[in-house]
Length: 117
Image 1 (cartoon, rainbow, N blue to C red):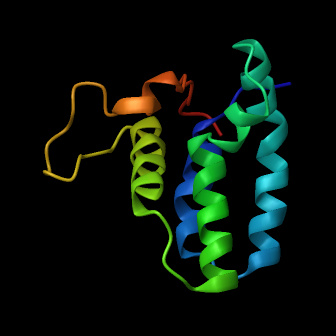
Image 2 (spheres, rainbow, N blue to C red):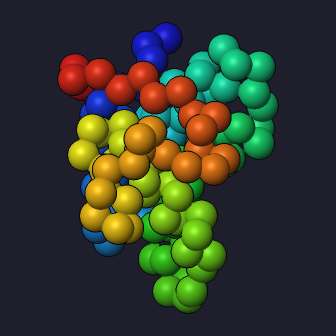
Image 3 (cartoon, rainbow, N blue to C red):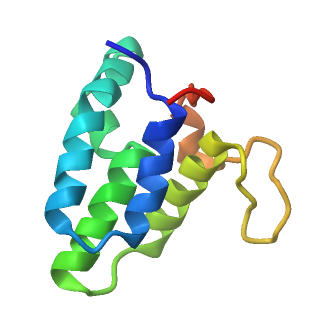
């Protein structure tokens, strides 16, 4: 099974402008097998997959579409930073690139995005 591609990270990023809940579900189910492969490679389990930045962005948008209520923005912000880092164009809230492009718990995510995809 292939590793996560740049396209996987881009789709997660673009999911934030989605208006079709069923399309989001379909896209997430396409990437989940690759996230599970990544989780297994690092002996991660369900929590690893549930907390993966790609999963968090998709589910954040799903929640917004379904409920349109406030959600914990720190988790969303961290997930968005991770995905943007994987795409190579992340800037932190201060407008400067961080040394790793990540922070805190996000350090655990192996970013293996490639230009392919």
